[in-house]
Length: 203
Length: 345
Image (cartoon, rainbow over the protein chains, first blue to last red):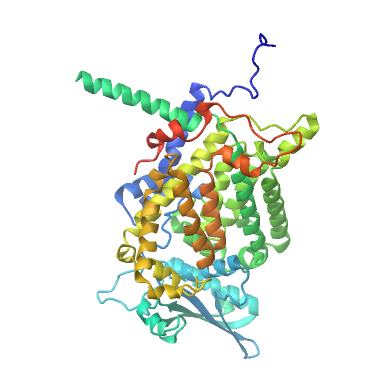
């Protein structure tokens, strides 16, 4: 037994052939460059945007175009959408999304929360000389498309004849105010703007 | 001049061998097997929750119409985003597609026909997210990222039905799969991608005043729409809030460096647990908190994973894996070379 050849318990591992390694190395390098394009280009940077243009097909097709800016630059107010659907018989269905009382489990609530945050996330278009108030800020084309889509969904869901949507912003209280007894849902922390009225004909 | 040339030659040789060891050394697929199970379970849960609103999000009168989604994705410039869900939205077709997706995610989690189901899991995962921009968040980004990398490796070589069935078929005792390059490659890509995520997450926080002043964590806990655990008692402890805020920033910023040295790695990973569990249970994003921890699990040594997941048997079958060859182990010399393989920051 002492002279028998030693058999390894597992096959001796071999790495890939050089040609194959070179090819994969190039792919890894390009892939990692693509991955950093997303965060490099938001907020816009000359280098980030130039690289992003090159890698855009890959980033979009593989869904890698992310900035990874969680709670940045600062945690801010949250947004909800309040709606008023007028039914054919004149009654109204009032509601809002997200709504944690009806949207369970939490992931389901969070999906609806993202819907309302999405329409508050686009940068305002600074066309006017006078600084616009939050209520006056125009909707971007993407925001408008989403608001209209939400409205049509609610109309179809409730078989309504008209729906009015409002964007509600819920501000963050200062810690001192909370220490003095201010509740997180105090009405003074909310403000609202009308997003529009829609009918089934808008489809 | 001679010194410079000698230095450059040595640098080139070290970079080349470091790169090769980092990416192409065969590795025990145990860690990848663990990541497959956790990613599959998360994909399965995520899509089970979609079942509750399938037609509301993907149907004909969905929250996000095809027109709105196209406006968001590419506008008039078009888009390279793709999804089969663009082409059909009838309830029958949707439910058929969705049922197939759930079955694939289940098979992927269990490690059944892993090569095929891992590819299909990524295809299905991406099909959903590309259809509903606006209903997504960090969870979806990490889900798809993990699915993509797990797909590249032989994730079914550990802790899978594939392994179990193969051992039954051949009547052989279950032994750990041999180290493989694809397992290493997949795990390395997850590791590096996690470093990119944390680095830019930390860097972007430096743009915010409250992350500098130390108030940002208050901004998170005082947000009623996120809140799932009332932590507003922190209002009375501004210094504690400041410590939590700045530890978060510096931990994120330095993760890409400090996670590589073998001795510091456990500390860095241990800090990830309270951070992400805080997000999970304090801010109501349980799935996001957990999926980030799944990403961090890619840094666990395969030996540790096997020790945690392998059940000893009387015959000693499949209990202890033979130690992989030294050059196949992560950490140690491999970790020291990681610097050359990290993306430039």
